Image (cartoon, rainbow, N blue to C red; front, top):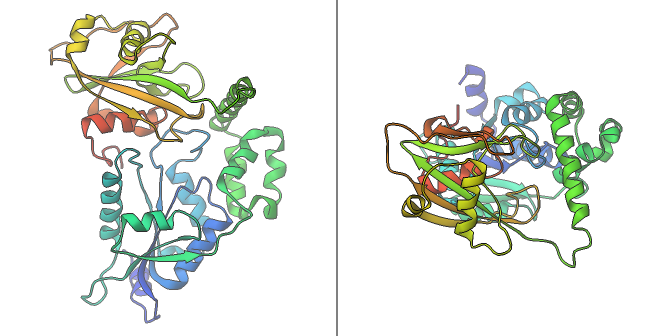
Length: 367
């Protein structure tokens, strides 16, 4: 910590809190987020902004990586304010709240500066009717601070405006009041919209619209059921490289939709035969089954409400990993060392599915 930062943190200004914590995804940072942070800076000596969904692959729900969101947030504040802001990444743990809570607690503990030998006063800050009340139930040791909700702006509407109609995105960004975005953030987003990454997101948005149109006449919103296989041998997990959007180029667990007359395990075994052409007898696979679980996060899939039943197969360690052949559709399967797993390279929630079965630490892939 620099001398300038230290002098600010230990100044004589009578702040109500030693530290306020603000947790969000900031996809992208908008006027409502900035309002909360400015209020936090008024009330606290230190402000920790935790940027959720860090180290995840780009998607329509998470278009910008942690570094990009951190830089956008920094651009909204002057040098003095930035000296009191700690912006830190936070990896999701979708199916294990305890892992996520521990990570938040550890990051706050490592950042907060003790005040003259006493325990620091720490609080959680958020917008009214936001997630702060939910966070409070997970962190009862911290106080809660509520900021009035900026009701005319939301990150989801901003993403829809940017990726729903590419031809109108620039016009949308030109209107500061309508977009709810500061000038520095709008400049960053304009540059991003010219990148290949943005083009791929537009392609995914187009596919999503086609998908929704196909189900528009259904009497109720559809719920899909898929299966995924977590196959592990000798410290490696079996993954498939996706050849098309959504998630083109990302690694995914072998799996797919169930057929009308299939049992779930039978569907999983079929996908292993068809997608990765895994030459292991079915009896051996069934004998290697160590667990199964339904993964049901409402936002886990771009397709809408999609439930995934995953099966965990722990194959007997061998000197040589089973050989893999490309599927008939051309998808290539790979054995990936567990130490090399990168959440940014995995499709949807597949990293968290693997993490759930294998007990991988939440921060294993963090810098």
